[in-house]
Image (tube, rainbow, N blue to C red; front, top):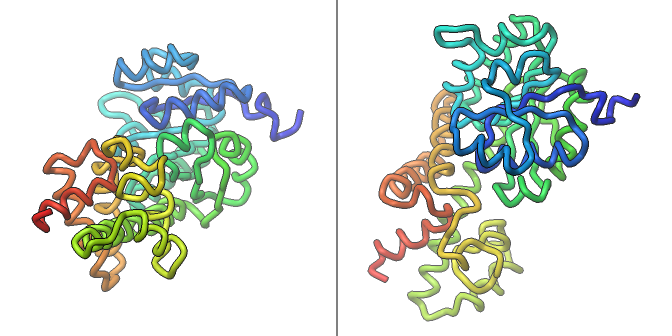
Length: 308
């Protein structure tokens, strides 16, 4: 049986069945992988079960006997607690020797490397593969995975990731996937603020959204924040701006990722100015009502401050 066949992957414990995790797990099941899931939130478990994901009674039950333990958690603290166990055996102690722990969460680079070190010390293998593409990408199986792993482990995780995503980039060793993700999202946050400011300025100067879009999308200001996730309704019909900023990527998540980037900037001693400023802007946006809105909704905050 080839290494790339679903059966060759063995059982996969999928822990974290939220808005991203559930469709990712469903896509694996549709492709023939043996998946058992778990989430600490009962509503997420119920939704996943209705979507066809077999669920265990606990994370430990799901991980016991699994060949791969895939985690999709909200934070690095939760991941580390799950690995170690809090007042009870954790995932690392409960899993069979040489289990591959694949973390697809977006967490601090230092925590990702700590998680990998813990897994290796416990006799397991480890890889980090955070994602980009949002819920739409998770549902469509078109996510981008930024992978931090040893070369010898790539063959074991690639078949899974190819089902859930369309682009896989091996960024280096443990933690490199997280490093690439926060660098990308720092630039994304900066570029969305810039795009939003440009459109608000265009409004003040009497430009139509379409005219400004037609210029930027084909000129030197071209960027994903304009061509795909345009912060104003009209020019890109699929952008969240056309749905009152119902999120593809929520403001709370952008604030979180920029906070992680800020930690990395400070720890690495980088003389960054725009990244920390973007982190401050999105933290305020999330705290003041934008947490559940798409991050492109930052334009409404800029309009408000501009008296528009």
